[in-house]
Length: 259
Ligand SMILES: Nc1ncnc2c1ncn2[C@@H]1O[C@H](COP(=O)(O)OP(=O)(O)OP(=O)(O)O)[C@@H](O)[C@H]1O
Ligand SMILES: [Mg+2]
Image (cartoon, rainbow, N blue to C red):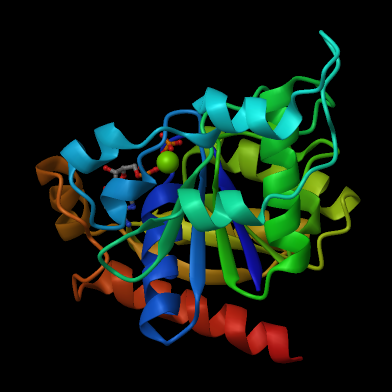
């Protein structure tokens, strides 16, 4: 199962991706979470400390790996085909909730076709994980839509588009939904986040209806989650309405994958 979590900046992607990943691990699945955001912070959500996060070198910034994989004897020429299994093995970080974490680092538009060595390594790595591994893979994507153009995200099984009721979040969600559909992603769903009352849910569900996309879960606005974020505490093991709604999301994904 390969799941990409997308949406406008700040809508709750990392909270949802991290909590979902930990729930998959708790259910006994080998789970890899990929932080594909340019300013990575998924590690914190997965229960690592800020000091531990500081020590992580994202793969795209790990010059020795990039060199080792792509260097040839000819200046300006680099290899495009190489194995990545060892990167997955050596660079994935064990997090307290049992999820393996891979921090990708800054990628200059994954789908742009930019032929720089770091991009080539990241593209190969994500491509390999998505098409050949049998783990549960959860991608915490960069905000916005840029990464969707001819990128790797189109090979995922499920694309979750997170949105709250703000107009700007909904507009981005609509754009992502169209691209996802054009990209042929088998399952695309909206995740309504920070839902506060009937009105905010209706705003989101109206957009979902017009796009003919299901709402996989409605996650309420939850002070405990906000508070955990403010205090730098991992929210994944909290037993609150928001984490319960993420369990519902997991059930939707699992149920939907059977049919
Ligand atoms: N359901 C919720 N209720 C209350 N607060 C929430 C909820 N979901 C997320 N938050 C809070 O909203 C903030 C943004 O969440 P998060 O970092 O997960 O968003 P993001 O989409 O990953 O942002 P970015 O685009 O910057 O990576 C965090 O402080 C988080 O704790
Ligand atoms: Mg994030």
